[in-house]
Amino acid sequence: DNLGNILEEYEYDVFGKPYSKDINTGKVTNLKASTIGNTRLFTGREYERGLQLYYNRARYYNPELGRFISRDPIDISDDVNLYSYVGNSPVSFVDPMGTEKKAQAEQFRIDFIKAYDDYLEIKNKIYNIGGGYDLGFLIFPPDKKQELKLEFELKESIAKDLHYKRNSFNTLYVPENVNKLDMNEWVKLPYYKSVLHQKTAILHTPNSKFISLDGHQEVVYMNNGFLETDVEDIGTYNIYSPLENPILHNKYDVDTYYEWGNGPNDSTNKITRRLKF
Image (cartoon, rainbow, N blue to C red):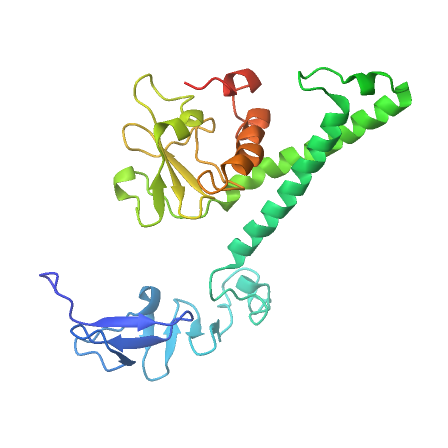
């Protein structure tokens, strides 16, 4: 109400089926009639109690089935596709638990690890630890050298392209200001674990870095509290958690940053990226 008191409380299953929850005991029961005339339930959508359906502006949704049951309105583009919002296959294209992006991220990590390992393998055949040509490579005949160079360029391109795509898996909501960051989902790291995100920070006003609870996702805020958006300092997606797997994190997340930066528009180079200030 206008005083902030809870008048009615609800619970939902993963498909959005509503239940009533007693505000005093917390007991969950089948949905009861609203004493205050409330019609908005799951995700704030209108719920037709008689039909037990949600009205999502243009379509009806059945929480028992976990799917929409009506086609797109005729004035929506691609209306010959009855369910264009799910590729005309509402039964196949479902993600009730919201895990599809997580599954994609897991597969991405597998693909990236293989690609980077393949890149390191061919790189080690050509270059020594100092970055110059390895003696073994130098004694190869010219045609063998050219073959190895072409293989190196291909595998570097594959690994680099995947490296630049990693940040698409930073999917947790991040507000513009750090004061609104949900600290139930993020952990603030000490400065010494944030030194690679200070390239554009003003001297003596360091950025602050946070990681998700699983260690994969990052977000960086400037000293003034606002979200860091410069590609040189943004929070990136980790293949391995810096807290749980620091050695593998250094190999697949830090070393790759040294190698290629955060993206194709990153203005730093291999030398400046290694300067920790």
